[in-house]
Length: 106
Image (tube, rainbow, N blue to C red; front, side, top):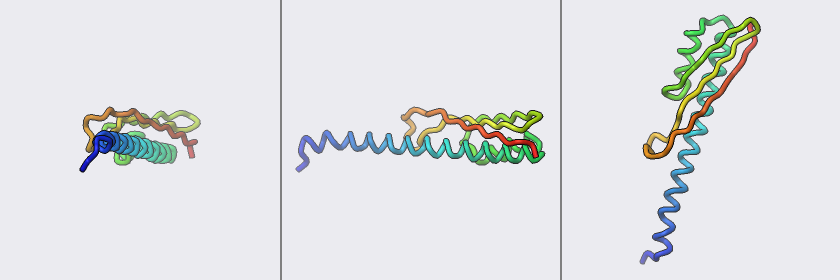
């Protein structure tokens, strides 16, 4: 038999699992933003045109990410920003993640 306590704990366990999945999705999205920003900054600093570096970074970034490449006399700064959330849990809120990377001109 299922006791009343077990019936109350089960929804709590499901909620904790959902929060865990949401946290993992946010962490993975953050790492994807970091990887994309570093890749684009290195490419642009080596002389690759900014639009090509942006396209290459878009392959690593989360879907729908906004990628900005700013070139200056000293180097390149790339910022990648996106909204991420768990794919299977559509009712959960999305979280904004971003990363920046700077590279000196070579």
